[in-house]
Length: 315
Image (cartoon, rainbow, N blue to C red):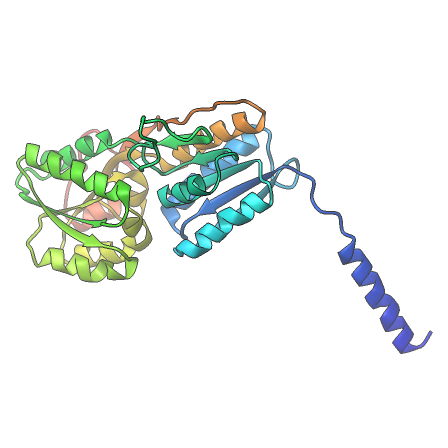
């Protein structure tokens, strides 16, 4: 056989093999995450672990289609549309903005949310206060903010001015800062607010807060905070401004302390809902996150020259 004929035969075999490869017939789960983030990844891992423990493993009896929008809204929307075109059995969303995008695009495919506020706080309920019938998963309320802010009075009794950054275009962030404002007022603290709409504004906004003489910074559950926390941390820590949060995951990234949801367990709790849905259960309603912790970052504590707060565990 000539070299030319051999090449043609081999090429034909490749084309036949690739062209006729069977398409996966496994039920599909779409997972949409808005951006690359260590905190959100903990929830994702918890979600995947719950699926596996519930008997659903990628490549074995389900196919997980994962998409990360890299912070781009258009990419996020395209991912949701792709899941719909693939007729996935369920869409998992992380965090709030991904849940909103999915709810806006499908009323039929079950949506399992995580790292998101209660549906009404995210603007996902109708005029009668009802959440979408296809929405499940696990949410957080704003009540934890009260407890988190109280930590400031406990650990920093002389603090007067609390700084915060929030995304003024994100409904749950606006709700959270409204709650924070009220709680600070009740505790005799002055809240110094700074709005941002993109993560690349974080350093400039953090510097502006330093110029307004804040004593403590409160990190809200906000996409701006999640996506640019290291920048905010470095800017504030250069002036020894402690960061308190309601998000336990941010403590592992440098925040001094927090009272808030364990993100791995948050994702796992949502994943347990997904397992029930994949097994055919109907009307699996969303529920509130169950596990919250008081934790501190030992390295940050040492850098600030502070002692371990009573009742806290090391992250």
